[in-house]
Image (cartoon, rainbow, N blue to C red; front, side):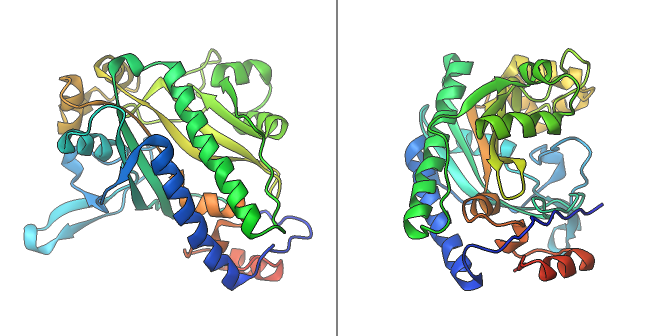
Length: 336
């Protein structure tokens, strides 16, 4: 069910056409910062994959894919990607990328089951990145060092936007705060996971919540994660405080990827052992693919946050319910 939050007294900081120019400036600047900070090179990526490859992302395990058949391939079925988490790792092995180096790409997806609101669209655009690491790099220290590099790129972007648009005045803390999902549950046992994120994000302004996917001591998960790409002990979300919408604002989901042991353990835990027979999963379990760290950074989300917009539709073109469009129009929220 779609939902719209209208901030009281909201007025865009910059107008419609200047917003379009600003979107390009932000995307151009940040992808250079990302590539430099993490030692990445840009590559091309697929819009759709064959379902039998096992390369599509199951996300939380319940979302339906968008699929169609190909006339010139005997009506072979393909699926629009939901993310490139697994494809990137295969690509790193295919390209023979050395440890310490990686790739990034523009990922475009359609998520047909998304619940539409200020932050969520059926159209997803993000930078997907993946980097080869050594087995000994599979630890929390390496994860946190990478998060800090990414956060520094975000701070540099904030400074860039403030220089070009002084009226926006984005302020970010010097350092990002680290906490595990279990520590967060212990701090706020009476709150839902979303309420916990809101509380810690409002207090710290920039947070990395670690260890997402497995069950907490309460028997519940902080959030769902597919069992076949992130190692749930070595992953997390970068969350900023959005003071326009007064909410925790996920800007990136990332993590060190599963090795042979983590893949087998997490597939079993999720009751998905049959996936071990898929080509991607077999390659991981046989140690045929490099160890990696990677993630996704929402392009429209980044633009929305740093331009202080109230709705993601102000920085990307998508499809919205008529009622939402009418309310936005009446409240200075100009959807593209």
